[in-house]
Image (cartoon, rainbow, N blue to C red; front, side, top):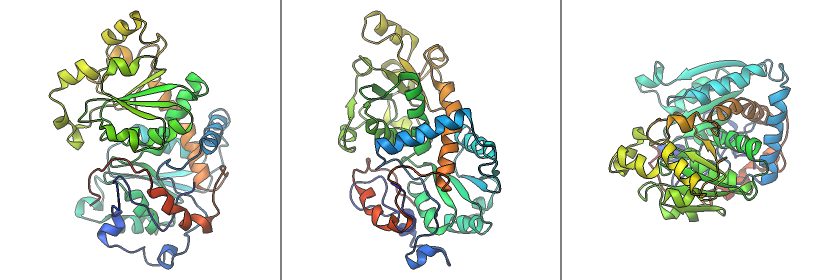
Length: 378
C-alpha cells in the first residue's frame, strides 16, 4: 500500500496516539499541497511494511535481485537524495548513499550533529528548509516515532523512513527478507527466531510485518521485560513469544540476534549483561550443545542488523562463522535500497500501488494492529 502524504497515522500505541505533527500542533508547511488536503506529488513515501502483501513484497525483492546484477547507472541521473540522520548510523546511511550513487543520483549527507538542530531548530523548520532546496528524496532517521510521517506532511520530496524511534525500520526488514530468501529459498514454513531486546527494536517490529506475510513463522525470544506476551497479538498472524531460548531455537531455520539498546535505557530491563548472555546469548557453547543434542540444525542461519556487541548477544565465532549471514545482510542492503529509491521516484510500480488521489482514503487502515506502546513522540 502506498503511504499517505497528508494524513499520517498514529504509530506505536494501542488506541489513539497523536502523531508528531499533531502533538506539536504544526500545520502542513505553507504552500504544501497537504495544507489544502491535496496529494503532494506522484512520489511515494515508505514509513513501514504494514499492509504490504506477499505479492507486493516479492515484487520489490525480485526487482532488487535484478538490480544486484544489472543496475542501470543513470537511472537516477539528475536526481538528488538527501540523507537526514538525527541518530548515528553506519550501515543504513552509507548503504542508501551507495545505492543512490550507483543509480546516478547526487547524494547529500546531513546529520543533526553540527547542524542548526544543535541550536534548537525544530523538525518542521529543518524539513521545510531542506525541502526548499528541492531534493527528490529525503532518507530520514529520527529518535521519535512518527517523525518521518510528519516530515512527509511538510515536504514535497519523497520521504523514506530509515528508522524512527522504536517504531519501524522498513528497509532493514526488506533486506533481511532478501537475505533469508537467498539463503533459505521460499520463506513459507520457515521458522525465524528473533532474540533479544524486542521492546526497543524497530527492526523486530518491521520484520513482524514482512516475514509472516511472506509465510514465515516468527518467534520472538527474550526476557519477559523485553518481550511481552502482547507482542503475539499485536500482529495479524505468524508471530509467537517464547522466553526460553533453547526451546525457541528447536527446529528453527534462522536465528536473528539483536543488541541491547542501552541508549534507550534497555539495561534497566535485565539484571546484568552476564546473566543476559548466559540465558539469551548466541554463544558457541550453546549452539554446539544444541546441535549435538539434535535440537538445533547444524546449518542454522545467523543474522544480526548491527552494530553487534560481540561477547554479549552473540559470540565472535558465531557472528563471523560459516553460518553467519551478517556480511551478506550489509551487502544486500544496497540493491534493496536501490529498488526502494526507484519505486519512491515512480520508476517502477508494485502490485497494489494506489493512484495518488487514493492515498488519503488508504491511511485510516494503517491504524490497525499497532505494535506495543512506546515513548512519546515529543
